Image (cartoon, rainbow, N blue to C red):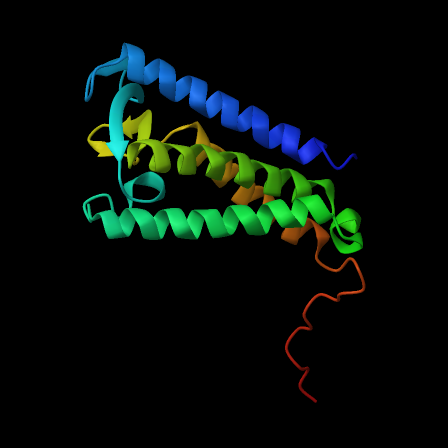
Length: 174
């Protein structure tokens, strides 16, 4: 795997995120709803000042926005450096580790771009069942979540590798 592969993946995610958000912003009015699968999925144009899936959306202060940008930029720098350096330890990891970091990088770039440019993030994917709604999200949020799931799967699949042993069971009674 070349050094550029994860950055290409991140760039594709960023491009998909920006293209989808630009299309929504240009073609769907704010809070306008388009049902795709009745009773399950709709497109709705919203803005989120909080973090992923609308958490802290009501906080609304510019200080909160800048704290989120600062935290996100710190994560971006950390992930970028990990991927750029690709130390021996990272190269020895299962492919899911590098792909997970690329997903997180691309998704975080998409949301940071929105925060810096607009002060909030465009969300539009709305899944629901009856009156229960999952928080509205976007392509970047999906990539970050997929990256986190891949990281967890990586930990599960690779535990016991690299000289680590699985935890011992409870001591036996005599």
